[in-house]
Amino acid sequence: MSDDELLTVPEVMARLKISRSALYDLIRNRRLASLTIGRARRIPAHALTDYIQLYLEGATR
View 1: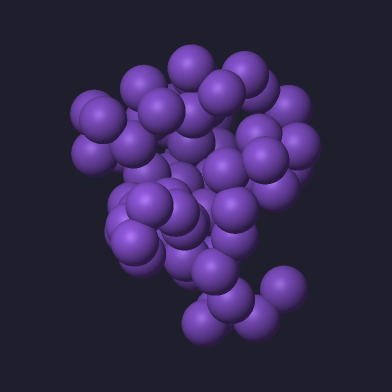
View 2: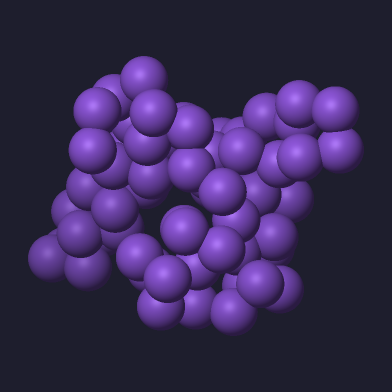
């Protein structure tokens, strides 16, 4: 996965193993960055990597 790759909602759901509503909660609460292109929601790969890293750092505290 390259840092400039844009992931779809189903791709991120599968990678995190969470529901669509849980993913949109992360986006709505600004815990996971995303952008809208036309009607399509995309998540930059680096944003997913950053979210996972922050989550892991918080889990180890």
